[in-house]
Image (tube, rainbow, N blue to C red; front, top):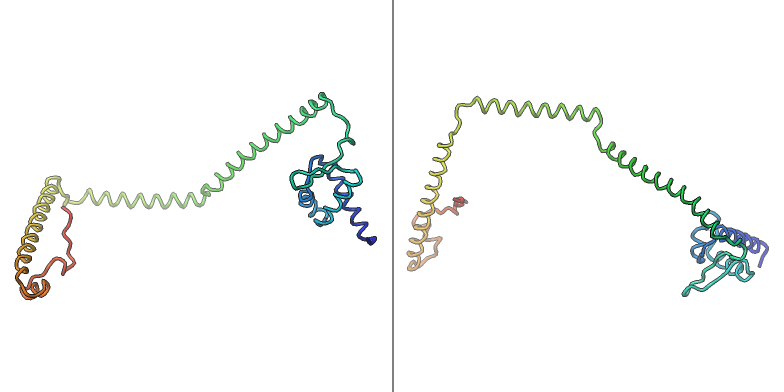
Length: 217
């Protein structure tokens, strides 16, 4: 191994040893590589070799987890922590945790308020909207005024009479159409030509010829 490679390997080992001791939790080679490559520019191969070398030297511990090797700091180097110390640490953690939760909640409220303000109309936009609504209302008032002033209103009785006449005409239209259809069908039973030729010779024009559809009753 050249001097440059030796220094690089030693540098990688130092970085990984310090990282594992500070984190004090298990890491795979991939975990360590992913967390350190951007800051320290370590390659995957260099990380794997450095971890294996540290384990061989007894500076870190190595265990198989399934088909994967897990590396972690040697726990013997750390002082034994009593239950009282752990409780004290938990108490110290509790206050910052509560503060973080409070800040997160405040941030959520501020984000909601910001979203509401962002979606709201600005003062010029609101003034323009008011002017457009006033103009629209003025148009409705003018239409209503014209309607009230008109003298040709249809009374409920007149409307009822129109509907009654429409129903009568509709029934008559349907009756005559049915009669004409039945009569022509009876004639066509003994007619040597097609229905179209028959209608042309007789001079009958159907609703379909003029794209007329019988309306709903």
